[in-house]
Image 1: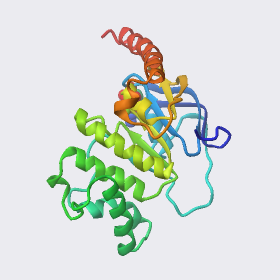
Image 2 (image 1 turned 180 degrees about the vertical axis):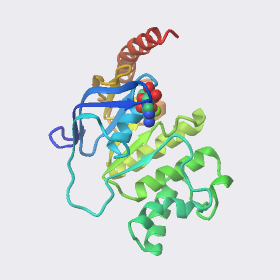
Image 3 (image 1 turned 45 degrees about the vertical axis):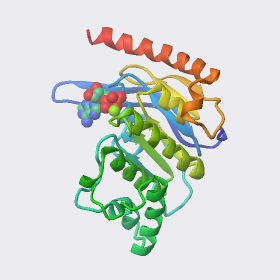
Length: 265
Ligand SMILES: Nc1ncnc2c1ncn2[C@@H]1O[C@H](COP(=O)(O)OP(=O)(O)O)[C@@H](O)[C@H]1O
Ligand SMILES: [Mg+2]
């Protein structure tokens, strides 16, 4: 378990309002959350509740409208964050190794060194032998492995993942989850992982944040007291897992239903 004294990110009453032509959308409202150094934090919430908006704010791609966001970091040459999205985010004209080492290239790392580092992460993700392939020659699961390898290779302080396995089939998803867990357990990088799957959140996370329906805020924070390393096939029958699953589902269900009532679904 990470130490809960050393937060790396603190959000205090963070709100985000999107301005449209003649109206406003309040996506986040008074969101309070601390994220600790070295933790794997999972975020679940009804669709459209502001999860991606929150990650985009943390990535510096979007400004919050009010409240305070503090990100603590030591002086370092490392990038602050790297993000993995659900869909394809590889450059189609670059080989696998060039894609995976792109962040390092941007940091000015020599070709030899960046190929070495990216090559290591590619092989950890089961892609040895595919370094010279192009994205169109790979399956969706393999392309997502390259995105994960690229994110780790650039060695950011914080890893932001927005439903990265959301479009994969069940078997590929399980394999990628296991591979991600293995690399994460070696690196213990602070990771914020958005998912709509409670199973996935409990398999991966140290804590799970349940968000309310839009405007999103933190509804509850659940500590995942399951020992590591975790194995997907074993963990599902663990009584702690089952109890946590039911607790999160109850919380989430309330929000999904209230969202459906609000939007008349
Ligand atoms: N750039 C934007 N401009 C206007 N509205 C946006 C923008 N990005 C997101 N929203 C709105 O903010 C709300 C939250 O969106 P999002 O963060 O994508 O939700 P989630 O990832 O939880 O599904 C939605 O109502 C969405 O339409
Ligand atoms: Mg989203």
